[in-house]
Image (cartoon, rainbow, N blue to C red; front, side, top):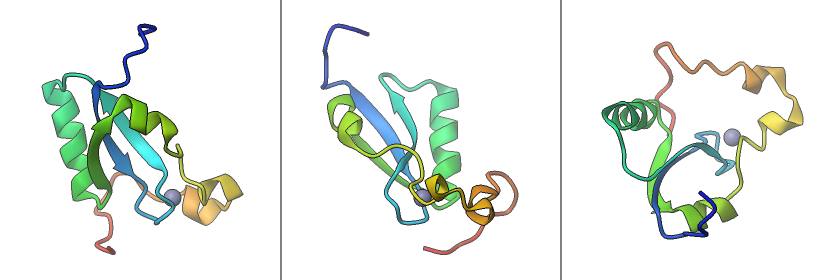
Length: 86
Ligand SMILES: [Zn+2]
């Protein structure tokens, strides 16, 4: 992990609240479980992108709105039916 490679492919999912924070990142070769996870978050409305580890490292992580400690947003369900807001 410390070989300094920044060109490893990485799948990321951005927060759907619009803050652009990365909520999920999977680097390297994707396992079947990884693909399922990505498909799952994409279905839930997260914006999935492919980038490199080097780029992902520069991106903001986590939900900026959640960092405001707003319990309403923080309690957003991960499972369940979810919304279709875009
Ligand atoms: Zn957010």
